[in-house]
Image (cartoon, rainbow, N blue to C red; front, side, top):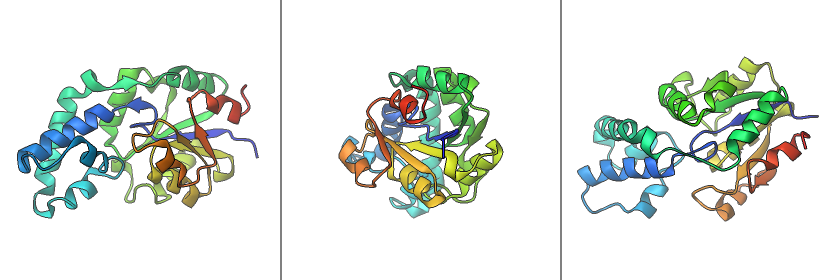
Amino acid sequence: MKIDTLLFDLDGTLVNTNDLIISSFLHTLEHYFPGKYTREKVIEFIGPPLVDSFKGIDAERVEEMITMYREHNLSNHDLLVQEYEGVFETIERLHKEGFKLAVVTTKMKSTAIRGLEVTGLDRFFEVIVAIDDVEKVKPDPEPLEKAMKALGSSAETTIMVGDSQYDILGGKNTGTTTAAVAWSIKGEAFIRSFEPDYVLEDMRDLLKIVGVE
């Protein structure tokens, strides 16, 4: 069946927030555990919800670590968020061609909207499913199913696009087609190991996949 719906992860897929996320983790962890965590180590924390990452570090101080992380993240947000080449023109074209688009993220909705606004992508997404909209996050099907329901779409005509295993496994668990971005911070080989249906070297590759070009 022809793809008519595209669900996108946000961080590391549509917008480059890697430096923002890494600096927020390092700022927080350096406060609680001076000298213990490196950039390479905190890259492992990218993808899951903050509560899961911090719970694995210090279950007793999860909430205060999340608070410190978010304060640093928000105060540096607009400075460190960057665009990936080809993303804006691809999303703009898909929107113009009438495809149904949604963002499915493990961020708080307010922060997700801010990231979309900074990059000008907010005008293309009427549906945003964030961590505060669901009980279970990717790779559970709940957030994807919620987005598809809001769009009036089915898994058979939907593709999930993301940069982490949670996006690819979420798509597989929901029954959608899956596409991984080769610019995943964890490396192309890592993301390919989860066997997505497609690997995008450039976001514009999507246009051919969905039949626009």
